[in-house]
Image 1 (tube, rainbow, N blue to C red):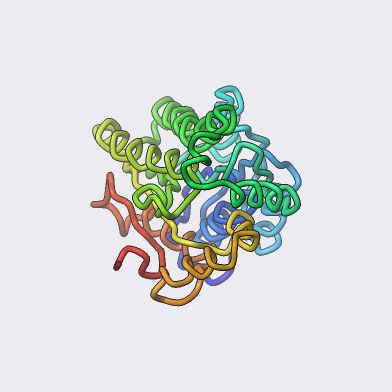
Image 2 (cartoon, rainbow, N blue to C red; image 1 turned 120 degrees about the horizontal axis):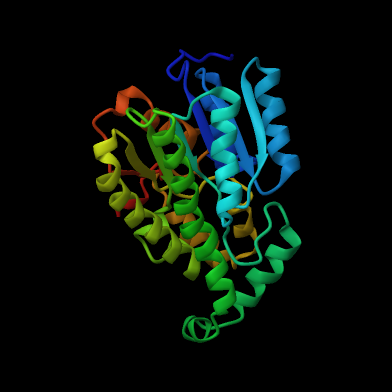
Length: 281
């Protein structure tokens, strides 16, 4: 398939959030390198479209409907990998939301939310945090990441494919920098980064490596929301990227490919930041 070099030949990968953005780019990139991919997403249509893209290029993929907050769905996702491809060797947890009411690609809803935030002072915005919204973001981004990993690790252990397996979580530059994400989003991604380090220590004895990627500003449906920010806020963001451009989803997929490949065999508990130089400040 494509121009891959077979770095993942014979491997089976699960990618959550595989219907668009970073998840889709990762699923396609892994398939190019020879992996069979389970494309998991809450939205069936986009997941099936990713599968069609992979199959049209000669790769192997299966779509599965998954709400990452559901243990039942996550168990089905992991079981699909085992039942369909007889193994599970790599996991990328790309499913995530920017806010409690976030719907990928719904710009009308995003514009309304951005305008509401812009109308508040920072202090008032803290006072007015909607706890239901906060909880939804943590449920999906943090607890959902854990639930997906729990289900996949259980399948790895039960089917003898844990040794040499690799897990990649998707955090954010917002995990370390308070100006690089909305309130609940940044807190959830900081939790993902801590979870990654903790899991790396807990799973190393089984031969499972766990690492994270903390992307900068990447061209996805989520960052498309930035167009509704005040112009001065957008300019502030642009000034923080020394490379002078936003990243491409495939640039994150390439980082994930490295982390799950044998080339990263001595990496665990680490985070890579494809961010255009954001953290050089």
